[in-house]
Image 1: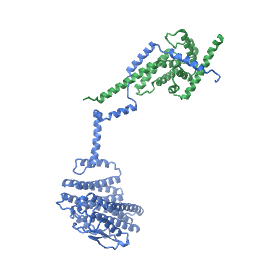
Image 2: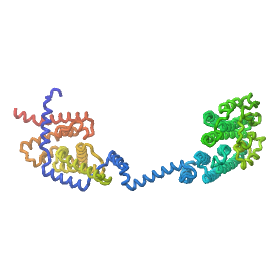
Image 3: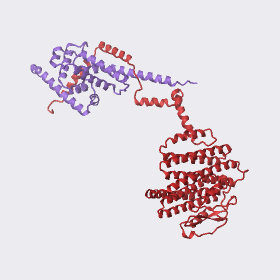
Image 4: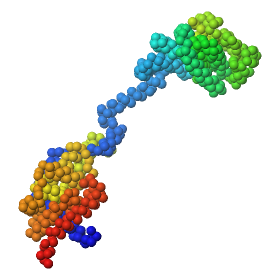
Length: 445
Length: 193
């Protein structure tokens, strides 16, 4: 190849290029072909803007607000979607007495409830709705809107929701899920009782002239207590069924799980108390601490029963411990939100929150040295919780505004007769009466 | 206050503008490439009338592709060549291949009624004869490179082959053409000598 002359390729190329100038259509042929092609083009007109890019550009153009209004179907659809979404969002924030509250109760919440498919999920959803109803009561009170009308609405909603929660619990029991049922029942009872306790404090701290909502709140407190007792009675019956169970192995595992759950709940409540102690008034701290101690003692009793292989009873005690922890948490949260309504917000002159906590540490039920401690400081009086094997002393503050002195709360299921206290609670609106209701949740059977 | 155009009128304007652009682009392409596509077809089928039909068919198919199927063609020139090539392949399956001897008997008429001189016509016919002896794909590579003056990259795009392969095809095509030409010229040269 190298021996061949290099100039031959250009010569061949030049000759070939001559073809390009000579081999071509004649003018007539070109015109005829043009005519045919243009005719075809007229019969098949062009469709521009067919690429993805150009379609995307069209979409962007169509999204311009000015343009949307000129496209009736799209505009109406978009407006409907926006209105529905904004209405649902606004309805979720509504309170009794608001225009959108019926939308919340009858539309958005039932729609969300459709997502709960299992019996357990449905029961948990009903329990959550009950808490929402109570939060609404708190918010109304916080905003000073708990008038007679709203109080009636809240009372009715709470009663209805308790019924629904109870129905869901019964359904769980029919499916042999007693443990889940009792958890939901005791949680509902604890929340209701805690809420009633804080509301009763507001009423006892304020004279009727100072707070126009007092009368309305009285009716609400009665409703909450009544429902708390109702759910507590149901929880007690469910707990009794669990105690009678004979499948010790399964019961042992259930009790072990419940023990862990109750310990977590107690830790959470303790953590909340430490965190919120500066934001709460002395009475709220004391109430929370008292309830928390009851939880700790119930847990200790549960451990003793577990050690003696009484797993059913142990489970109930652990469940009780968890409920008391929840009650303490609800007490703290509600008291914090309604702090402005509580007159007794100043610290006690002799006992500060920190001192209460320090005293509590000294009175640790697990500490041998605390068992027989009976000292009282300042205005505090001693409150004893009988836990069967141990007698734990708890400091409390004597509150002159209270009509009744604190009844001795007991978690001892063997010796307690709580029904007497429960009967009193319907007529007695003092905050102390709630302790009796709460501490008897599992003792009604 | 200046009145802003409505979306409908804007869309209509855009549509019309787009339609006009497509039509203008296509008619421009026809004016630019009709001869090239015709030559491309002619050097495949060596029949002027058939080459004309194929050329027209290539343009109509291309227009159909971007209107009926709603596709956008970025390189219209390359697309026209590819369409023509596919049509030629389909055509060759339908029609029996014409041998070089038959073509010589029929006589080449690549220029039509172009008004060329007898010498020019004879020269072109000779080149076409030489090119007809070069087998595919070398003939196509040589044609596109030296008659239509396309770059190897453009040829690669039309023929769906790598650029290096195109270069090899061009080189080998020229080699074969040179061989044919030298063989054809050799008796004449000897006679002159």
